[in-house]
Image 1 (cartoon, helix red, strand yellow):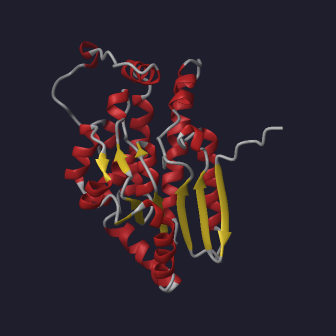
Image 2: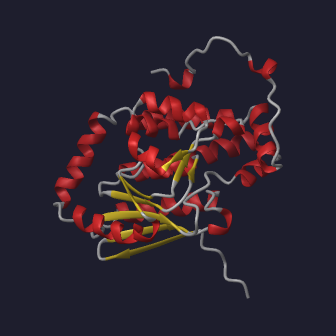
Length: 280
């Protein structure tokens, strides 16, 4: 008898919560079930005073391929597609916000490629340790959609200039380039990754819990004081982008392994102006 898939595994060991993306056959693509499980795990961690740190990692060669595009396309065929897309964008935003809001330090351990929504999970963590073979990419525009929920986190972590390049170019960054611009903080060889992660945990946990929590609170109240409002705006932009003809074409082209045929005349190409969703 087949054992049911556990797309996320969660355990607590000596005060460290270990959260693992466990859907390697699907490149750890984020399904709605995975988002629900991730959010439940965040809530459990937040409610447990014995937990002092969270480590986020993944099984298999790929850390996370982003949102489950097959699931997204299936939703597009349903009559209530717009409602489902808004619910999905909110579910992803909720996971990101819950991870950022944790009062304990969070460490992302990235062993391989991380794409699209997976980048958001990584950047919602406080410290990012990556293997020297990891890569980082935000290819959403090439799929007819936007990285609107991830965008505020990119700005928060590496600044608007780097965010503009990453979000528009579609370029896949090497681990070395990601380190250079601040997407990750340390690189090691892949066979040394978990040993170094354990070392970072020990180092971080030498700090007083109250001091670590207050440090995180200070960072969010200064550099990140608009972050949650921006995540909310990004959620609305992300959901709206999925309703476009370009989104349908982009997702179909990706799944069919062909080049998309964009409909430029229908998009009102011209002078850009801020979306009402991102204007204060």
